[in-house]
Image (cartoon, rainbow, N blue to C red; front, side, top):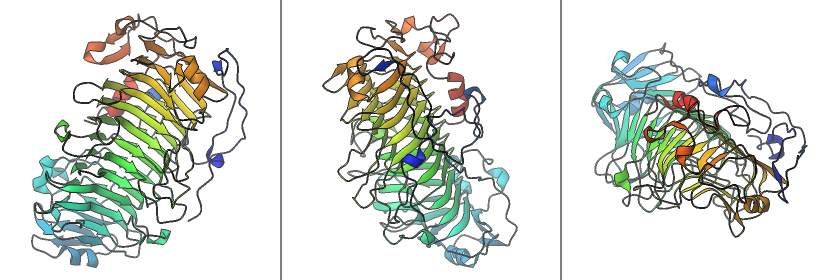
Amino acid sequence: MSAPTSTASMRPLRVSYTASYSRNGATMLLVAVAAVFVRFGERTALAPDALSPSRPPASRPMDPELPRRFLDTHYSPPTGRTIVVHAGGNLQAALDSARPCDVVTLESGATFSGSFILPNKSGACWITIRTAAADNRLPAQGTRITPAYATLMPKLVSPNNGASALGTAPGAHNYRLIGLELTTAAAVTETNSIISLGDGSAAQNTIDRVPHDLILDRVYVHGHARLNLQRCISLQSASSAVIDSYLAECHGKGFDSQAICGWNGPGPFKIVNNYLEGAGENIMFGGADPAIANLTPSDIEIRQNHLTRPPAWKGVWTVKNLLELKHAQRVLIEGNLFENHWLDGQDGSAIVLKSVNQDGKAPWSVARDITFRFNRLRNIAGGVAVAAHPEAHPAVPASHMKFTDNVFDNMNVGVFTGNGRLFQLFGELDDIIIEHNTAFTSHSVILFSALPQITNFVFRDNLTTHGQYGVFGSDFGEGVAALDHYVALGYSFEHNVIVGGTSRGYPARNAYPATVADVGFVDVRRGNYRLSTTSRFAKEASDGRDPGANIDAVDRATSDVP
């Protein structure tokens, strides 16, 4: 595997842009002319109003690079033999004997106890392992499975502490699982992963040992109420997908636990239309160093998932955040519902993005080219924390992130308490764009902390409450004072509506209504955060849209998520 592209070569074509305020606070035009780099593999884009999974909104020169490859997971019926495994049958023998293009059917409702392995076989034709239930008894392709279908699912059950129910041989490839339930026996009290796609240890230290072309389709993966479980799915593979599935009871006490976690597979990854319960982090990339030199999990699609946890877990299992990226690049996070998060193992930010060389063996570790759009976040203790490289070991500073058209609602209230900050920005970040978000925050809109400074910072067309501190810089005050100190050269901070704020000490070309009632929402009490046509802020964003999120686009992107 070749070394990853350098930070410089990942940067988009740069053009000039307007910065509302310079280091001395005066209005200025900052002409930022940077080196020109050509980037390949991005999709043709359309406007946000044309949002669909295959038609993302238009990108601009400073935008992060999108995934270069999106996996096609359309299902075609197998053309080979059918191997039938009844209750009490030898599942591993059936897996060993299956040839490319075969289908292995497992009796509905039957239990198969063991730690099963997908063998490495020659040939690129898919082997399907599935329930014997007819297709018309399962949810259709593109529709999420739920526990209500458990009676139709054969059950793969790990009987031993520390053992997976399903794993892969080195280099195993071209397997699709459909309509299976995977868990541990009730007597199991601790385990690492229920499904292990690839190996996160030093044993998988070359790219030829990485399993690839693996699809988990409409599977039900879960722990149980007493199980200390590190993760439901360990994703250490290439060209792998988790789609239309239901992952629950993924929790642990005193350590991080995830619904899905990966660090030793290159991608691309597709995580689409799943229900994901995780205590430590629902989805995480990084957190351990890859054993393969220069490997970075890349080209990751995270769309239309429901990332949540029951409030009853508070104080029972260790909770950190809903999504964390420590080592990942070219990530699209779109149309998800993030909910139910509180301060516990961390200070309460629902989303954490930072470059971390976890154990000091991977200095190429980086979080960059991350697009976060059309998501809903509700019942959360805090919003998004972005840090350049906050840990002790050297890493490539985090960069190139865009947050647009997201709704942050019900923050730092009830049992969902924490820092109450919408965005926290730490260290020498580059290319951070925050625009067209709608948010209701109690503490601060932005907290800047930890020099050196941020370059190429945009905060534009957002609609948010001011909270207690507004835009605040640690030890340097609020508003222009914070921006001038923590943002190098210049910044764009304009056309925002900051409710409860004041123009005193803040940049011009923004609006500061006194109360939420002054904004002119259609029906704020019922959660309709569209602006009415009579709102004085309607069509006043820099691009002629309403400030805040495109609520219609957010609704379309998340319409099938809950």
